[in-house]
Length: 307
Image (tube, rainbow, N blue to C red; front, side, top):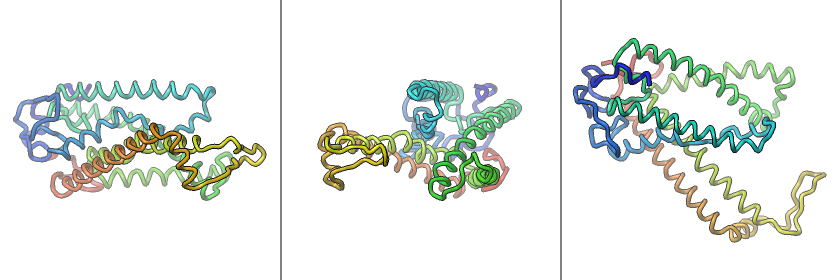
């Protein structure tokens, strides 16, 4: 909300609006549907609309990236309750902030929103708060991310020692700065934050929310339906003994769950289409920005809003 204080109709001074479609002297205007040509802050036409989809997916994309937290919960059955509560809270917070911001700034709303502030002092205060919040989020996500990489990739595939051993702890000490060095390179190499976040939304948030869950659901239902009465699980060896396999088994499971599995396949394909179009829109925006639509360059501290 701080980004609305001191907001004015010319937040970008005398320069043209990004993309060269709206001049800064035009009064603030808001629209309930797709803005007409000249009032889309993320681009124009079809690509501009998909840029918007890539951004709002952060509000409704309840991606369960760290479902292995189930193993750390006292009562794992509470996971779905916590996930539902978190998704609802995030959705309301994101949507309220976006609508509130757009109501005050209209076509001059920009990502990140704090850069739309007319007062330099308030913009600086907002940037400080953003840095603090970003550091907290980075510490939390970074810690979990490195643990996931270490446990699921390095230990499983490359047989690294567990973190409980001294060797594992030493490797962890080396891995943390490497992880953040790579993060810095990515952040510094792509200065167009809005377009880059659109690409991340299309590739990661969208797929982890829609594409992969549908695929996992298809596989689970088909494999479960394909089970036969004479098959059994051997507790001693930890293996499940099947009487057949291959395409015959998959087709048997598919026939038994034909309706719901077919719907999930359609859902899965639709998610892939949205992912592809979203990536295309974000990549085109990045190409446009680097070809002359921005004054920023990689590894530069120059403001993207400078004239």
